[in-house]
Amino acid sequence: MLSLALSTDGPLVDQIVSGIKRQIDDRLLRPGTRLPSIRSFAGSHDVSRFTVVEAYDRLVAMGYLQSRRGSGFYTAAAPAHAEAPAPSDNHKRNEELVWLIRRLLEADENTLLAGGPWLPNSWLDEAGIRASLNVLARKNGAYLLEYGHQFGYLPLREHLALMLGSLGVTAHPARSC
Image (cartoon, rainbow, N blue to C red; front, side):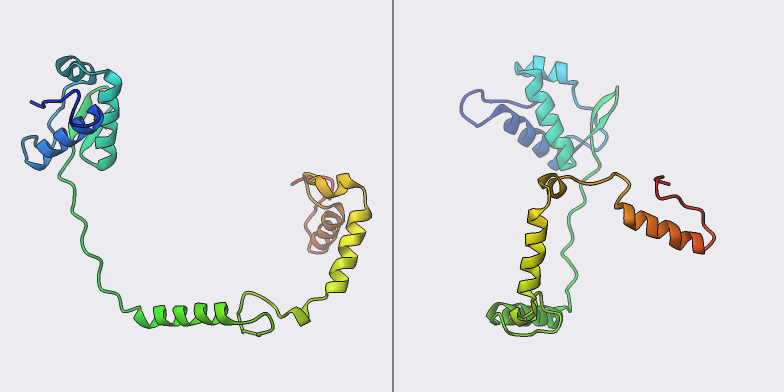
């Protein structure tokens, strides 16, 4: 029997969870043992059914209970204890990653690293990017904000239809499939 302290030992849900968990760990409740129904547990311990539901749900999530639809809650098989992870021999790889990250953080903006996450500023066409952005900004605002046609960009669809046609596949740019 589980005893609950209504005022001193913390929330009732936590008390129910720890009490049932302790009984399962101490093997007072064997695997497959049916627990009292939510209604009968709540009535015998003078707590809300919602409190019991939350406690049972937590125990299910922790792997201590199993819920069987229409039948109730049962104690689960003994939870398997986590094994220690196998020793890894990835130390060399980890050292290389740390070295690479350190190099990336210490590099200045003009450093060229093969496979690095950025291009040197001298490689960027700032004038070309500015010109392209100015052209876009001068166009109708709806053009910038809309998603476009649901089947995709029409000139691309027309080009794909031509390419597929040369391969003997009939495709129409106005249709989605």
